[in-house]
Image (cartoon, one colour):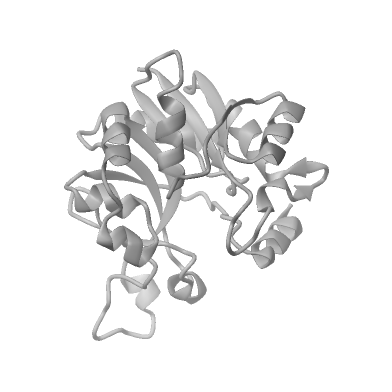
Length: 244
């Protein structure tokens, strides 16, 4: 099977504008993500999809392939779908790689490809066990509940599931899952996503994955132990600098 990685990139983030061009040790967040994705053994190509001329300039500076897109998209996946239609090759699986997750390892991309390609689901993604109250209560940390097969039932910014009788050590006794925003789409699922209107749940939670889920698609959720840090705020960026 063939796979392509597309990084949707824009500067107009509401919580941290311009974050993708913020630099640590001389490298932008976008460059770190691109370099990690290029190390994947299964991606035949990695492309940056952007509406911003400054991102285009950064892509050219780091030698990255890019597609200049319109600025009319509601989500990163809508941008990816538009860019994918303009490629000169059809891929079996299209990865949506978040430009603000510089610690994403190429091995995780490869592992998700292997697990997802043998599933019957339309989309593959990653989950990690939540072990802190801070993550559980943080609306920037997306939570997911899964069925008995491990596939997603629902994604939310709220702590889910809600335990009515919650013991003091509930983080050890109960399973809360953090969603990590790496997606693997089958080509037909990506096309379906772009054709659908935004769903009411997607708009309510501001979570694009709810569009396909609400329209009966299945999300394969692969568990990982790796810590992936999304940079949503300036405070997150300061934590990343300390970590690196």
